[in-house]
Length: 221
Image 1 (cartoon, rainbow, N blue to C red):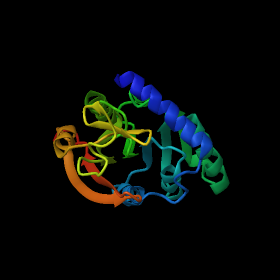
Image 2: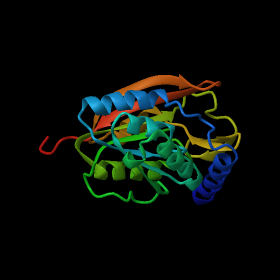
Image 3: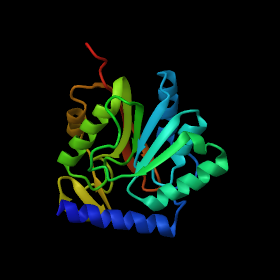
């Protein structure tokens, strides 16, 4: 079931970006603004964005001076990012890779200064797949570097609504979401320094989300 759902969602997002390539506009999300400030204050130079879509947040990181590697399973979205990066004069700081987050990340160990993922981990991924993604993120982050991610949680109005796929995954309006419990957040932070779990809302519903900041321990600690 999970594999078929993931494939259906991949086709759905590809269609959405083809029909409306700028569906989220070009203004960065509030979590990306926060992440850029955090990464900058911590001395990060490179940022890996997972699930970048058409790149509004990746472009914000590039404009802020970071080297950005953006991944997404939609080549259509990343093509739009390339075009906008060239238009904005930051193409030399932006690289992209079409990548399914269920596969190992195509980066060496301890090679990234910061990872950002806005609502990627709460897509149609099983709990085990989410754990695997976070383990891969830990592998590619440098010791002392930080993951900042956002997810819709079980306090959201759509939790329990629409079509249930099990494992706290519900499909509503064609979009499948894995709603996070606080227990899952804490589980994913085991072995990390959990720095912040910040509640916020976004969109018209509004969607209820958490912004989670967790840091990979430095060696020897």
